[in-house]
Image 1 (cartoon, rainbow, N blue to C red):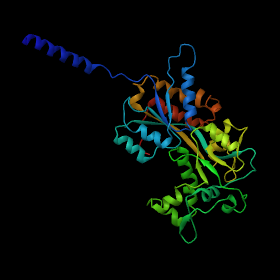
Image 2: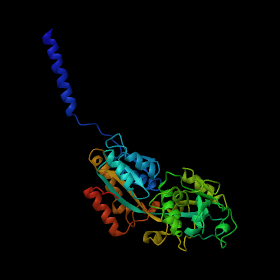
Image 3: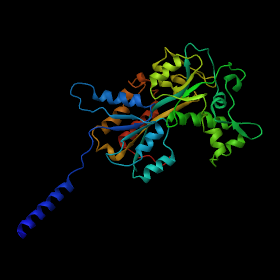
Image 4: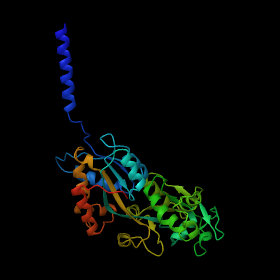
Length: 350
């Protein structure tokens, strides 16, 4: 009996040793979260790799969670239980980077993939209107400052109240939700930019005071601003059916529906490929993806995917992503991005 027990013990130990040296089974697909702006380009890259006879590449699992929400998911941890890539409509912040580090997500590879822009768009049936960032600030900030160095709830109901040169037209803006990278771009390029005209208020930025937040970071929550539906097609339908509504949407969406909507001038600059690529258009931004270096050699297809995204045939001047609305980076910046993907050089703290 003792011999039997000894044999069973040895078999159990041997089985445990065998299991301990077995490699962990990796997912056989890529998991991508993040920006809705980058989503169509990620989708196009995945579809490109899965095309053709005998293609073994599995289309990635794409989740349009918004930039902020996507980075939170990406930074939750390392390993196949967590996302491989996060798409972003802006650079990762230092706070987000540090959160990643604290959760064991250490070697993060940052890759700039193209340019886009936030535009104010309206139905082609609507009367022409040209805005400035100052107009947009006073129309959409939660609290407005005055000469007496006080802030009060935004009273403006029409564009004419914002600027006497604008039409007496109801302020009705359909814009991105709070978890969207586009909303964060709007906050930085419009709201915080508007506060720079009030030095006493701008000086409170580093203190992150409640007063600064209300006047320089918060969008009003009344009928003047309505968060957009998740479905891009629905946004376009709403805009094209209204003569007063203005949408705050990505330029790439305008290019896909140019027969229905027009993009408005901002600060006298028309948003178009050339003005966005050069940065002349004031509401332009860079698009990124972030990938976990530790996943590149363990998740099947991940290395191939990031290489394809940064191939000239994809994100170059005449690449297929340009046909989807992506505005290519300069040739020099594309070389940098391709080099980063080749070396998988981790980013340093922003």
